[in-house]
Every structure is written in structure tokens, then in C-alpha cells.
Length: 335
Length: 253
Ligand SMILES: Nc1ncnc2c1ncn2[C@@H]1O[C@H](COP(=O)(O)OP(=O)(O)OP(=O)(O)O)[C@@H](O)[C@H]1O
Ligand SMILES: [Mg+2]
Image (cartoon, rainbow over all chains, first blue to last red; front, side, top):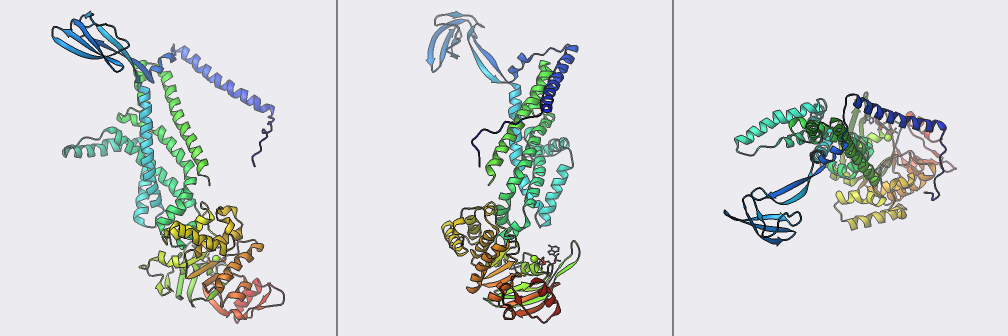
């Protein structure tokens, strides 16, 4: 029963407020200490330089290529078609209506600005973030598919499936992701690409080897989560289904997996949060995801302190929104 | 209907247990056999070997002429003909009562949704809980859950029903309602093998009572040998074997 009255006001002990105050003092203390420390090394904080790496306005100037005269300005939707007549002949340029610097009849010299327009461009940081999201999503989807099959194979009675899955899971979980990325890129990647080149096919870009490494890595952990989820369903459920004449796959699909999903979901979310964070390793094989993009920006802007904090914050936003989504899903699935 | 010959089953883990040691039993169509015996005597194992939930090491099980233990036998087809009711109900908690009863009809018997629902509703009337069709198992009492489990098994139109202590997980006041359903079934001519210590049930509808101990059938008694002694729920049986006597004296206070 949900009561409509407002909840009773909780009376908290004084120690709660002391603790809360201490927390904020500690937080601000640390920030202040950081600030003072950066002053010591003459670091200049320039937060105003950061937004341009998310998005920036790029100005494009249209210039005359030869001396001549503006012969005509024909409307063309929102824009204008500018006809420039010179000794070399006529030239038509597509220019914006706003930002037009000349009128019909004006004579211009080579190099004169005819029109300016500004476009919003996606900054490097945003490109990196987007790539991180893409890689994580694709690797997650593939990882779930691999993990589902491998997890089911792990509890199979057939040694072919069980041992294959076990070998896969142990191999992946027993070696560092960084090494696996290297194996995918330098070993398998070199092999595949050489064979493809011999057959006259196009090369597969590093991005896909990176995604494959992430997906197979996540798949092994997902497999263990799926296995644990299946095994957490009481044996009696399988026996009841089988005693009714259902085959093993039918019992899995209709009885075991629907129940296992609910128990699988929370650890699965944890796995995908790790996956997002681990994708930062892909920078080493020239994939310009968030961390690599941040590094590149730091090299040119020299605003290392701001950039690394921003980078961490962006990861935090990704992981936090994912865990919120999963919490929501979990509540939806509860029967 | 059921032919069991020299059935043997040994569990090796965690330690050696001869759960079934050369069990032979023959049950005719329409017969109701009650299996009794102390804990660990192999009653559940015997029942579970009948539909191959447990694979016997040696011996034969024939159900309606089909060799159950033959690896070439399509076991799922046999199981569809052999309903089983468990001590712990084992209803599917993520499905409603109606869906519990229609699921196997649809995926195993390939019946249409409408046909399966019609069958389910008729069976819910039969077990006396028509109004609970939309409820989830955890919203039902133990007795109601067990009756749904019986309906779920009956929905497959089985030729044989196996009951493994169907009432021993129930509160005493709910035992009667489940036994009533089982009695109705027995009177309708269903072939039944029931592991139960409900002697009233045995006396009323069973043809034979089989006593098992240490993986073997020690004695088979005529259900007519069970005599009600004045007060209800008190029975007297006079078996030949000492072990049977000892066991019965413990369960028939
Ligand atoms: N899966 C198993 N693995 C190992 N031992 C088992 C297994 N199943 C049963 N047993 C053993 O086999 C013996 C017979 O068990 P079974 O369950 O058939 O007895 P039961 O007569 O049904 O007993 P209860 O009245 O307690 O249900 C017991 O000693 C039991 O411990
Ligand atoms: Mg038992």
C-alpha cells in the first residue's frame, strides 16, 4: 500500500551533519590544494579554451580567383549563385545570401573576399566521444551474442561445446586486454590483411580489429555471467520443463533464460561499464577514441589539466547514464 | 502399461549409493500403485528413471511398449505421454497459471493458442481453481500451486502420471484438496505411480502398495490389506516382512 501522506521527517543525529560538513570541507580542501599546487608550477587554467574541442565555428571565405566584375547574383534557395566575369571567362560560385560582401556591378581583384560563412564543426573531443560510444555499443552487442552462446555452451553436456567454451573463457580472462588488442591487431590483423591483399581485396581498418578484441574480451565475461545466471535457476525448473516433453533448447528458451535474464542484468551492466572504460586502450592501435583524442588535444593545446578532467568526466557521464538505463530496465522486467 | 525389469542405478558422488538395486515392477493400464519407503530408499530415483530424468545403469523400462532407456527413443515424445508432479511443484514463476498450463501444449503438442487455453481452462475447473488463471504462482497457496502443477501435467493428455510426494511440502489443511484431485484422476482410470505416505489415499484408490528399502522392492501389498481402524486417519496393515512392519509402525502412529 502506498500512503499518500508525506513521509515522516527523519530526525538525524548531530554526527550526521558533522560528517556531511566534513565531507564538503574535505572536497573543497582537495580542490583548493590542487589549485594551490598548480599555482606553484605556474599552471594557467584556461577553461574558456575547452569548449572549442567539443564544437567550434569554422569560417569559410569565398575569394575571387581573378580580377573581374560581379555580373549577376541569381537566387538559389537560401543561397545565391554569383557570376564573376573576368578576362578568362565566366565563373559561377555558390555563396551564402548572408555574409555576401559584394553587389552586382562591383569590380573585384584576385584574392578579394566575396562572401564569408561560418559553419559549426564537431570538435576532436566530441569525435572521440562518439567513437568511444560506437565502439562500446558494437562491442557490447557482439559481446552479448558471443557470451550468450558461450555461456550456454558452458553448461552443455557435450564436451565439444563445454570444453570449447571453457578454453575460450579461460584464455580471454587469463590474459591482459592490452595483449589481446595487440594480438588482434599485430598478429591476426597482419595475417588477415596480408591474405586479403594477396586476394586483391581491401584492407580491414584497425578499428575493426579493436572492436573484435573488445567483443571477444567482453564475450568471455558475459559467458561467465550467463552461466552463473543459468545455474542459479533451480534444477527443478529444467526438470519440470523436460518432464513435459520439452527439448533442451525449448526448456532453455521458454523456461530457463527468461528467468535467468533478471539475475544476469545487474552483473552484465557492470561488465559493460568496464567495457566503456577499457575502450580507452584502443588508442594504442591508432583508434582515435576519447582518450586518444584527449591526448592529441593536450599535445596541441597544452591545457593538460583541464583536458584530463574533462575526459574523466565524459567517461563518468557515459557509465552513469548506462547504469541508470539498466536500473530502469531492471524495474521493467520484474514480474 | 509400465514394465520395469532389473533396473539398477548407482550414484558415485559424493559417495557410492546403490539407489536402485535390481528393481522389477509391472503396472497395468489403469492401475494405481503407491510407493512407500524410508527416506533414501530410492523411491524418487525409481520414478525419475521411468521418464529418464535419471538414466538407469542397467535394466529396462518399457512404457506403452516403448523402450525408454534405448538411446534411439525420442525421449521427449515419451515424456509428453508421462506426466510428472514434483514435491516442490516447480511451476514456472515467470508465467501466469494459464501460461504455465499452455506452454508445453503449444511448444510440444503444437496446439494453437486458443485450443491450449480452452484445455487449460477446462483443467483449471477440474482442479477447482478456475479463478486463478491470471495469477502468478507465488500468489497461490501451496495446495493451489500443486493443483496447477497437476493441471499442467494433465494438459499434455498423458497416459501415465507420476507423483513424487505431491503433498509432503504442503500444510496439513491443504493436503486434502490435492488428494481429492488425485483420487478423481484415479477413478477416471488414469495409470498412476504415486510416492506418498498418505495411507488413506492408498486405501481408497490404490490397487497395490509397494514398499521399498535400500533401493529394492521389499514387499508388494494388496491395498485391500489396509484397514481403517475406527477413527479416521488411523490405519492398520499387516505386512509379511519385518522391515515393512517397522516402517509402517513409524508412519501409522
Ligand atoms: N543426483 C544424485 N546424486 C547422488 N546421490 C543421489 C542423487 N539422487 C539421489 N541420490 C541418493 O540416492 C539415494 C536414493 O535417493 P532417492 O531420492 O531416490 O530416495 P527417496 O526414497 O526418494 O527419499 P526421500 O523420501 O527422502 O525423497 C539416496 O541415498 C540419495 O542420497
Ligand atoms: Mg524422494
